[in-house]
Each structure stands twice: as C-alpha cells, then as structure tokens.
Image (cartoon, rainbow, N blue to C red):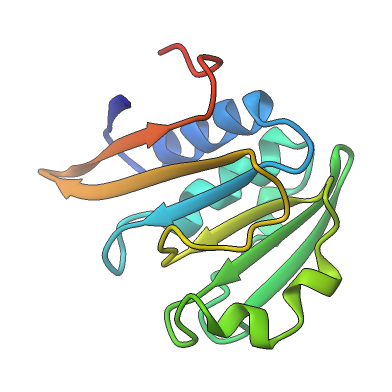
Length: 144
C-alpha cells in the first residue's frame, strides 16, 4: 500500500493525474472516503492524466454516472452512494462499459463485477488541513 499526504485540492488532482498515467486501459479505481474527502477532486485529476479536461468532471452523486471522452479512451465516473454496490448493475452498466474503458467508482465496496481484473483502491481521509491518500494497485507501477 502506498500513502501520501495531500495538502490541498491541487495536490489531490496531481495524484489523480499521476495514477491515471500508470493505469492501463480497462483499469478500475474504487474510491473510498467520507463526504468532502476529495474523491471527485481526485477523479478530476485522473481525467487530466488521461488527456481529458478536468473542468468537465463533476460529482456523479445525482446523475449516478458520467461519461467522459479522453484521448486515451472513455472514462466512466460512477457514484454508488445511493444505489449501493449491487445497484450499479441494475442500470445495465456492464452493457455500457467496455473492457478497455476506464472506470472510477465513488463509494465503492470491493465486489464487482468490474469490467477487467485490473482493480485498484484509493482511500481519502481528512487529515489536518489536507487529506491522507492510501492506495493499492495490482502491480508495482505506483512507486512514490
């Protein structure tokens, strides 16, 4: 597990951008953290890391699912807060997300079915004026 203290939103976005560059096509990120912990802020940086426009990224809390086109492929940004983990699959998500699309899931547990076997987790916790990020990846590509 890797950890990093993030002093502000800019540092949170930068971590998202860095990790996006290490994520292969079809990669899934399961995000955990309380309300306001920075999950959507991290996702904004992740979109930038895929070559997309971070300004397009908004919280999917009410819409449940956002889709963004990036130079590296489609990014699906999902929020399971209201649906619960099983609820995502009642939406037909498995029919929308292809095996080479990127998926970022807020309020995620650990169950899928996720589109690929490459699944990473990120936890964000408020820590003083900033936040503490902890993440795991299926390989050693996230050296920090």
